[in-house]
Length: 92
Image 1: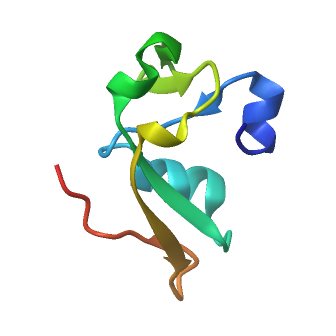
Image 2: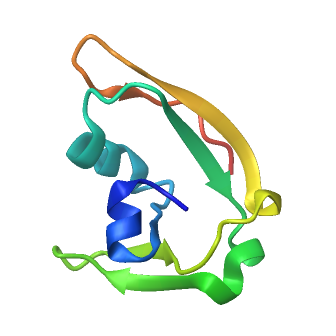
């Protein structure tokens, strides 16, 4: 499962390390209670598809359930005074 837009679209929207900050700013600015998940792509290999976004970038999408075993770590995202999320340091 995922968020409302994931349910509508039929897949879980994912972002790479390089995409996550812009994605959050574009789609979730000011939204409280978010939890960032780092996912091991090999755990969702069969369900993972890379698809072109509206602006031509490739984004990962998960077409299936996201198994708990795929989650490497989690971190809550707090919202700063500018309504943008404060991201943890992301390890390799």
